[in-house]
Amino acid sequence: MSAANASTAGFPEAPRISAAAGFFSVISHVVRPFLKTPAQGARTFDLLASSPDVEGVSGQFFANSKPKTANKIAYDADMTARLWRISAELVGLTLAIP
Image (cartoon, rainbow, N blue to C red; front, top):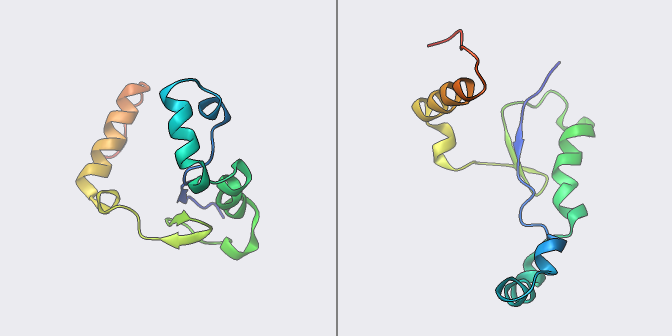
């Protein structure tokens, strides 16, 4: 059985930004305590890819390894149809649905 879920890594630390000079260097020191490590950011993706706990679960949004309610725009049928249509056009595909 196939499953399709969405997830977020949250805000993991990006070493290149942390090492940047100037403004980004100052900001990175301020926000660093609130950032996830790369391993923490990957945890939800690992769960969805390999855990039997989510076997058969599909169509959900996950954050911090738990199902969550996505932003309300994600449930807007007209907006999601538009996104699919534009995405298909950008890669040269024709959708079989209107």
